[in-house]
Amino acid sequence: MGDDLGDEWWKHEGNSDVSEAEEEIAEEKEPTEKPNTQTKTGKKRKSVTEKPAKAKKRKKSEQKECLVAQEEKKPNEDDKSTKPKKRRKKTITDVLASSEPKPGCPADLQNLVTQYFSDKRSVIELEELKLQDSCFLNSNDLTHSLSSYLKEICPKWAKIQKQHTEKSSVVLLIVCSSALRTIELIKQLTTFKGEAKVLKLFAKHIKVEEQVKLLQKGITHIGVGTPGRLSALIEKEGLNMQALRYLVLDWNWRDQKLRRMVDVPEVKVDFLKLLDTGILNGCKEGKVKIGLF
Image (cartoon, rainbow, N blue to C red):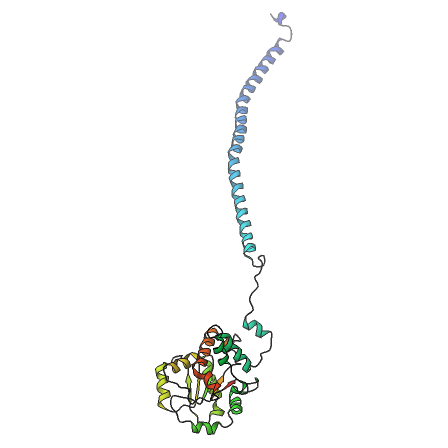
């Protein structure tokens, strides 16, 4: 048999053993490679499952960007600079701040009276309300203090105050816009009034009945007050106009908003009602003189 197989029979046997060993190694490697393919497929599956999560993240990020964009737009939309600006009406303060104040004159008062009563009186009655120049005293040219102005228009004040003996009346009536202004004007009367008695006639913290009693109690020479309270005193017959000779209007003074007494609607109406209580008739009869301070 040795001759049949030849001299290299042992080599063939060795090769068969080697081939069998390689086959066994190959079989052992195959199961190890299969899980590798499974892991690859597993990774692919994971990537598939990760896609919706990434999509959600993208949606959330897009929503956040939209919200941020909306918040950035809001101030721009609300910004007044982007909207057309409405023209603001000029106030009295704006007008006066850009111009120098001018002293009042009798024509200013006459125009105010005509405008107010134009829709309340007939043409004939409006003519009766017109005052002659002789009804007015010299107006303040913005250089006078109250005392110096009164000394100019009432040079014989010492004699006039001695002749006044009627209760519930005054010889000189000063009309202003507020209680604080009333007190301020009374302080300015120090060098003018002499021995005259001055009474403050405004509504703040003082009842009408108390003022009526004060007017009835003694002789009052000068009254300083607001139009509303003065009208109320006249209606209750606590103050009469029989002895009145001088009506001084605090015409040129302006408050913090640069408004005069006749620029405040409520005070303006009360003031014109006060003039209509008999003062205008007294002016036409020559009993009362009006001065614009």
